Length: 421
Image 1: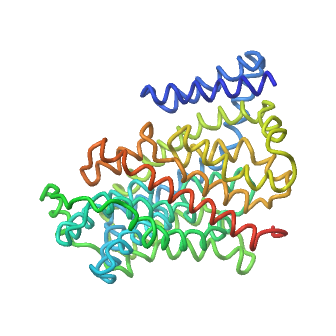
Image 2: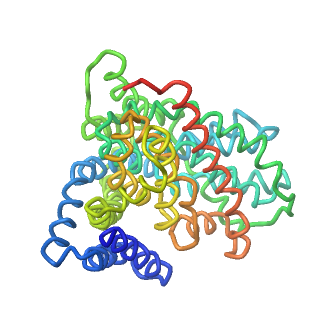
């Protein structure tokens, strides 16, 4: 009980520090140290558990860094913008919200960070929204909602870390949530967005239109890299040949450079991808640290005694732990990391299959990852020049999208996953 209380104290301290604008990396590290000491672990044991937690996620960190190759290529060659523009043009103005949501869903699903996907599609969305008289309030939810749907089926850090901590194949974890992602997209576009207040169309700085004049690669060339990655990762479930994401993702990036012919963007793409992934990698070190303390404490035992034992408790704990940790850190990646590293053994021991445990934790991490103490809130609001007060009004609707995805992931497991690997 003492170690469980200590872990809770450490986590609460980290949350308070993050809310006070202290770096999430140092907030989580300080929370880990305070949690261990408050839980009676002693200095040596606290340090040992922190190092153990970091060590557990090291393989995932390596894979995440290599994922930066594909992400950087998609953004810097213009492939991501080309994919988004093609989708919007093909679906047309009659299906504007579907087009925007599908664009960010696809970009995120092929490996672009969800905030970067929103920022990439935003200039296109703004131009169309101004012509159609659509409020950017609804427009931003379409972008964010689509990004959340894509994030639960992507080779992004949150999915990689969840799969790693549950010792489940990344390709299988991605595939497990495909139905939830597609249905979640339709619910977002046709049920949640119509519930929103109409608002007024607003004019955004005209200089955003300059980005639309850039010559972009063709859609076929743009999608070549991601398709190669999907095919390589699909080899395991289809023919039993396992290609690690550490190999598949960089290969996709190389194919993307070749297909688009943007050789002059190679160095810039690698630099951009490494910068984005380095930030995540450092964050994962601190999340691994506090996860090590939580895992070594009796907090999981306390939760079991509160929620009950058996498969039902494990089923509820998977998405719930992802949601709670995403709220604490305001990050999908950090939320999925702490939840999966801390509660995977408990969820697995309850009888939940590894890939479904990872899938449900990953879906749960989208419920509250957009709170104001995280960067996603500010980056997405800034992409459409939305003030903080107005951006806050979007939170209930974003949370509803994440909740829908979590419920759909859980229902998918109950329907198809029980008794599966």
